[in-house]
Length: 453
Ligand SMILES: NC(=O)c1ccc[n+]([C@@H]2O[C@H](COP(=O)([O-])OP(=O)(O)OC[C@H]3O[C@@H](n4cnc5c(N)ncnc54)[C@H](O)[C@@H]3O)[C@@H](O)[C@H]2O)c1
Image 1 (cartoon, rainbow, N blue to C red):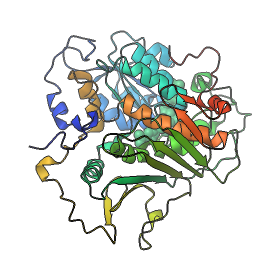
Image 2 (cartoon, rainbow, N blue to C red; image 1 turned 180 degrees about the vertical axis):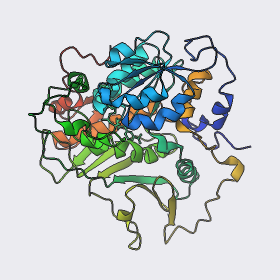
Image 3 (cartoon, helix red, strand yellow; image 1 turned 90 degrees about the horizontal axis):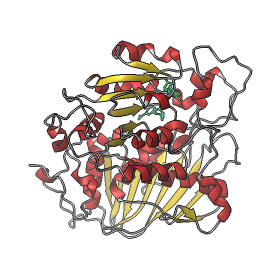
């Protein structure tokens, strides 16, 4: 039998196993019960953001009852309606969340709406799968986490960091926790995606009658419509807007959500004590930086000391531990430095590099096969199972894990804007050494939009 919690410092995350999935379907619940699912054991789901990334979820949704579909762009409805012909159509997600008998929400809208929809859904006792990133400011991340923590005994959440289900994530965690590189000393994570933009797209275009641009903007400030904001429909349209401050957090939230997850899955970390960022680029009030290096100091826990974790994006890179290893060949990766060597990993594979002097590896015994962490299985199905099986917190990327991670990233952008190291009081959510920097932890929303409604 495979192990569920073989490492000394067991965390919630070690208990997420296929066994939770195996239990799914065994419990038949009354319609719209908190633990989800009508008598046929299917969830009544609202799909918000019907197209683009949503296509990746149609397969999962087909196993449930999609009773509501919401999109601000009528041109993006036909695919979803073909798959879910009985669903009621909405254009305003606030109304969709009040659809009678709803159990759960799956949301694929642009990033500036995520924390809003997450909070509103939780406040209505709805399970929720939210595409990444969970939030685009520190305050948004904190608000979602706070709301979630009051409901985690009854609501299942998951953030769309689906690469987490790749077996390599477990293997990296196992070997580092088992001491393959000795004591963990430092972590480096990087992503090479670069989408430079000069500023918000120019106005002067008529808004098509099929698009509700006001709802697309949602809580963000007014911006003139430009067709490029909505020009693709294949799950990559986010690359047309996620670099603008009012709509996203650039690569921090885009590939950063996936790649930092490689490190987060190992570190058992929460909030940092300090954050520092640097970029060769001048501050652009419209566009988040392409090239950025951000270091987080993460406090010690019961298996490791204080540790620095550094995120590099858009051309910034850590040094390679060895001249024959070109880290630039790994587009998105993580490197773990221990006192006896390095682990270098991308999403699917890892390299273990013992230190030349002390790394004879006699200190390391790979765990037996029957003690490997169970495969997570299908990432979306892990969430639907958790909605139904009475173990709602048993999702790999629930809103506590994911909010902690994205709060770090958003702090990195605050440090970039403030220019200098920020000391952070994570309990209070306050920068303690630079009062002015606290303005970058939150943002002003358009009149009529409430983050925690
Ligand atoms: N997990 C992954 O690997 C992955 C991959 C791609 C995208 N994403 C995420 O998915 C989300 C959507 O990305 P995309 O490329 O599909 O974007 P997109 O611009 O195509 O938007 C997706 C859909 O949401 C609709 N929409 C926009 N605003 C809305 C609103 N306020 N209410 C309801 N519907 C609205 C759009 O019309 C579109 O149909 C982003 O947050 C992105 O980060 C995740």
